[in-house]
Structures are given as C-alpha cells and as structure tokens.
Image (cartoon, rainbow, N blue to C red; front, side, top):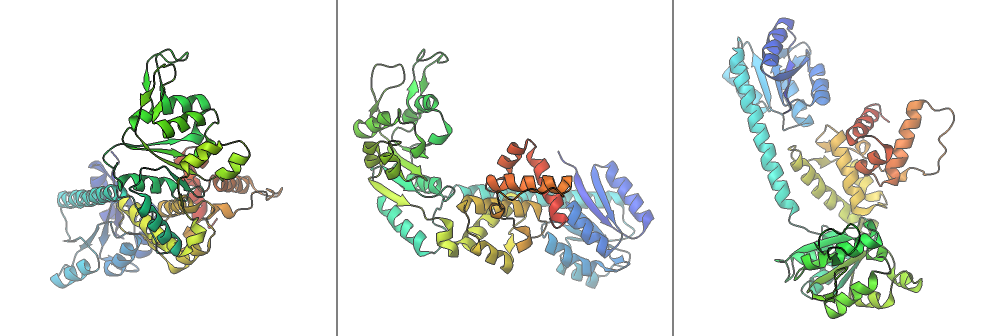
Length: 447
C-alpha cells in the first residue's frame, strides 16, 4: 500500500526535524516547506494527502495560504498549528478551509492520530465518489447535448428501439456508435437477455468464424474441445457487430442465413442450431460503395439496413461539446476522488472550435490527459493538447537537440493514435507511466 504523504510547512528547523522524524518512523512520507511560496509549490508538486501548516510564516500566515491550497485541490485536508490559539482564530481558519486547528506545544502522538483520521476520511470520500462514478457509467446515454442533430437521432432511436428488425448504426470512428447500440439493447424488450459485442475488424476470417458460430471438437487442429459461439451466447438478446464492413466476405453468407432463417451451424457440425437474436451492426464505411466494389454482399447490406441510425460527427454538433466535456470531467473527477473539475472559458472556446477528427473518443482522451497532468481543479487552454493538429509530414530538422527530436517523435505517434496515450506508449515501446512522465515534464517546461 502507498505511504501517506504529508506536506509540513514550518519555518523553524527544529520543529520540522522533530515532526518529520516522528512521522517518518510511523509510516508517513514527509515533504517540507518553510514559507507560503514554498508551500504552494510543494503542494502543487508533491500532491500531499494532508498538509500541516504553522500559522505564522515569514511571508504570510496560514489564513492567506489556506484558500490558495484549496483552489489547487479542495480534497486535501489542511491542519493549522499555532502557539497563540484563540477561538476567533480557530473559527477563521475553519472558514478558510482548515479541517483541524491545533495549538502548540503539540504531542506528536496526538498529531499522528489526527492525521490518520483525516486520511481515512479522505479515502472514504474517494471510495464513495468512485462508487457513484461506477453507478453513473452503467446508465448509458448516447444523446448528451441539445443540438438539432442529436435530438433528431434520439427521436429516430426511440422509434426503432422496440423493434426486432436489424439496425445499422453508421458514423465516423469514435462518434459513439457502440454506446448507441448498448442503449438500444438496455432500453428495449430484450434488456434482460445478454448484450454480446464483437469487433469484426479485430479478427481474421477463421477467428471470426469460430468466435461467431463456435466449433465442434476436432473441427480444426487446435479445436481440442467444443466451443459455444457468440451467437448462442446472445440467444434472446442482442448481437452487436462493430465494424461489420470489415467482415470477411466468406463469413457474410453465414450471417445472412442467421438473419433470414434464424439457423446456423458450428464449425465441424452437421446439424443446424436455432437462435433468436436482434442484430445491431455498426460501421464507419459506406457499405453501398463497398457492395459496388464487391467487398460487401448486396443481399447482406439490404438485410442489415432495414433501419439505419446515423450518429453525427462531433464537429457537426459543436454546441454539444461543453455538455460532453462537463460530463466526462465529472466522471474523471469522481474516479480520482478529486470532485468536479471545471473548464476555464478559454478552454471551452478551444474545445468548441477544434474539428475533432477523432470525435467523442478523442475529446475524452484530450480531457483525460489534461486532468492527469494538471494539478488544478480548473483546466485552462494551456492544459489541452490537440495532437491531431500536428503536421504529420513536417520534417524533423537537422538542428534539433536529442530531447527535441524525442519530443516531436512522441507528438507524432500520439497524433497518429488520436491522442490515446496507452496505444501511443505501446507503439513507442515504453510504459504508459513513462510516457505520462515525459509529457508532464514537457508541460512544466512549457513544451
């Protein structure tokens, strides 16, 4: 378990030495500061679990420091120490954000108990926030916003939700097609049955065949046991086939048979099995063009496109961006026990004027990275990085330092991965934490 980190703010070396030694012996990590200015910087840099602050400091008092620290992170408990305590001063300190007001001389065992209690309370608040976040994430809403485009989509989706006919969801990558598919299931008559999703682009023809239809023992060399396919798993529920445009042409007739006859065969089997599923398919491709080019069967296209729902690109509903951003920031703040993270006006304007080639997925990634790398509860424009704006073909240059070359290369990989840090780290061959450390270092340097 990680050790509790304490920021100790006092200008008397002897006091700091005694407190630090005692707290370190009892399992705390202690960072020190001797002034208001050092305390602010230490708080921002070390992100303590609790701050212990002497009232009188060389460049101000704790009453001046408390609101500044609360602005940096309101969730961190603050303890004020003073040798000249009074009820009026204690009341004022609590008003400014102190959780505890203690007078000197102080028994270190008492301070230890106070710190342990404050840390336990903070962790419980974080747990409750995380629980609320998990509950909120189960309530899928693909229609956040008030734009005409998203209202029209909601109206169309509500009309087809109770139907058993196949639905084809179209839209650009990252626009929210899978969220809409799950909404159709969870609000429809099959909601008590399974929702099974399969990404057709992620599997080869043989793997897709086996995953979708299952196989019998001995159907192929590695088939050492019979396997139930996802069609059987989804029986009486919903089968969501993402990126159906990438489905191998050899598999498509088998899917058509399922839709028309509600029957299929496992690989290596000689008898048909019946299945009752509602198909929801999604694609970012133009399937009519794919059909003309013989990459997709005409008959399958007509069968799955009985009902078509088109998810608009984010740039087509720019007025919804602040609503989506606030939703994601609330979710991220709750997950990390930080409470609500707000947008400064300049950040909101930047989000609304950006073209979002990666759509909602890119918006979430941009905000997630900003929250991870920023220590502030308010995000300004400088905290946002729109990686896909980087020119892909810009020459690296011959007069750059090694660090500058590394910086530009990482920026390009991030751009190609749509700002997705985990995928970019995998491409670069480094850990996600290492990539975050590099990004954070450059951000502090103003890069």
